[in-house]
Image 1 (cartoon, helix red, strand yellow):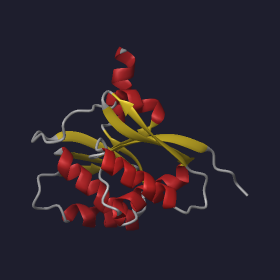
Image 2 (tube, one colour):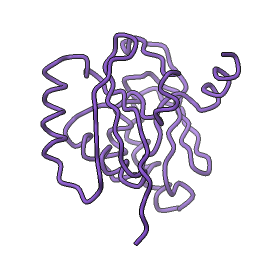
Image 3 (cartoon, helix red, strand yellow):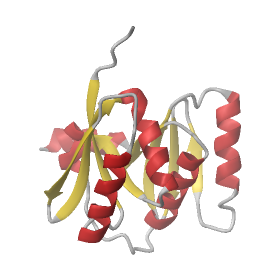
Image 4 (tube, rainbow, N blue to C red):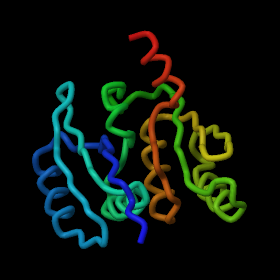
Length: 176
């Protein structure tokens, strides 16, 4: 039996600042019956509530899919060590931004075709994307990006990281 080490992730979920939404999410997570060890907590960072989860890395896509089925939209999903680099800015901006998503198995043609089919469903929206070995790089508005993350998660695409490109995290770390 292989024991998967626990990782700590920070999930920045849309509208989680509302008490009712946090309470609803807390009840949902408490009802979640899983075969893996799972802890969670709500924390306030820069006047914004975030959800910290401690679970095996392989269980993260399952949690993201589960919450997406229940209409929770993700703004960022990062390892907790990158939490201090998150930009908690208003979402209702019309400015296109660069985002990056780490997807497991993106080098597999079946998964790549599934991702491209989902992206083609966003034809009416302004979205530009490129695929690399394990990452989907997207330039679009934050609202469209959150819908894209939800669509991918509902279609059982294994997502491990969502948010600003990791290059911007590294640059920010060097300048600090």
